[in-house]
Image (cartoon, rainbow, N blue to C red; front, side, top):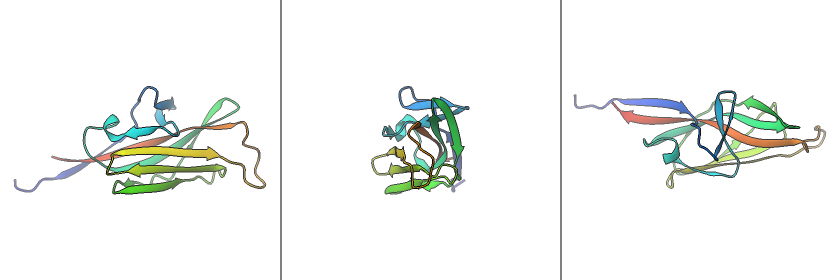
Length: 135
């Protein structure tokens, strides 16, 4: 065969001690930590998909699923993370393709007319990764 078939492989965020928080069978990247792509796969990554946000309210962990939209890894991308279920979330995923790193940044900020978020803490973002390998 002269043509190579490209097979996509999608997998969830792996457990990385000191970097991820486990909850409900998922692992969540903690805010403000820089994640090197080699930490999740030795194969080149084609895209990253935000899956869910983890936060706590008065010490109780809660998870909100996100629309699963893959973000192609090309150049530097700043992708907004938002949820209608959690309107106080102000977050973004920064993907730096050339340096093969990403970072989740975010906060919970009360907007006018919203209940107080002073007892809420943002804990992390769950991701799925897609590689393309030749098979």
